[in-house]
Image (cartoon, rainbow, N blue to C red):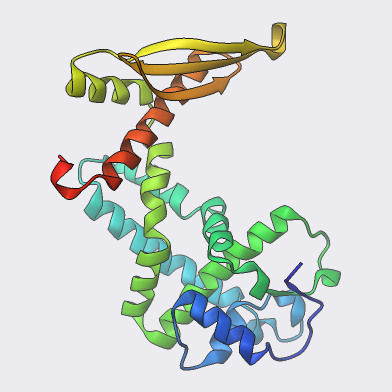
Length: 252
């Protein structure tokens, strides 16, 4: 499957490290730090403190958190302390780090001895990707300095903040969508049940939200209310994507 199962050698191939450096767009002065950042303690139980990513992960987690907090504070100046806290907590969560690590393609480079693990499954793979992402940031900080580590976090992690924001801060997507549509056209968004399936307790409704006759988004759920909320969220995401892709002179 691509990961270094049972690879108990002291080294990772030079070619593998070079490929990983190209992926990260970072050239390490001390490659042993990069090797350590992708090595799970199952591969070196006797020397884990020196040779595994455990302490690098601790450092990287703190560095990412600090940069994310600073970015949120400077970017979302109208957000409350509670909203900033909720957003930060989700951005630096294991779920989001795992997603970033998987998208970055870290998994094939991770050294882990599955035989020394109690279980290994999809969740284990996600957890490893999250751990290694943090450890790599810690390794970059030590090897390249604080500025390079910040630039790496800005390039790899910050783009997720806006994505997560719409999930965390968007507690009232219908209200936000109504405000946008009213400002755009002077009309209220209309919600319509497009499909329904299932029977009694397993019903599923598909709801669409419209601006005049234009379908803005759809949502599916076991209740019309929740399906409408999901449709509004989908519409907000679509409108946001269109705004980001619009020419500069068309933006507000």
